[in-house]
Image (tube, rainbow, N blue to C red; front, top):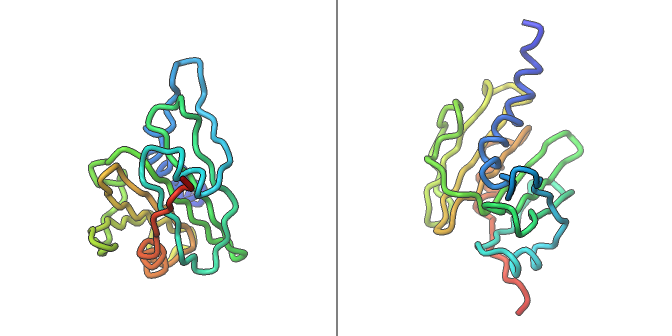
Length: 170
């Protein structure tokens, strides 16, 4: 099937739309929700939900951290990390709590992350280099979603276990 690779590459976009669409809905029909570059401390100080920063990154480096304008409904924090081998991680925080389902992706496991059980979903076959993993962690104030490509489930769970609360300067 000639379109199969394109469909597999589109899965992360579909998943991101499912996870992020409620958070990035425009405030008004004619207003688009734009992101503003920020720091972890600024985000912790200015957002109404707890902010978590990864303490372990499995060789990834941060390339983006943005928060939407305050006028956006369900504002969330969006961070992106990459590695030279093409691995990518996106961490979206402050999104409304979902039903725990990630579209049509099968539930792979329910690993413990701190005191909570997370839900790990996988798009694509186990040995597909473009397989996308989604780890969803429910918090008291919403949900934290980790979306990973070319990162093992073991590394993704380790990254999630290394999330630490950020305190903004007083």
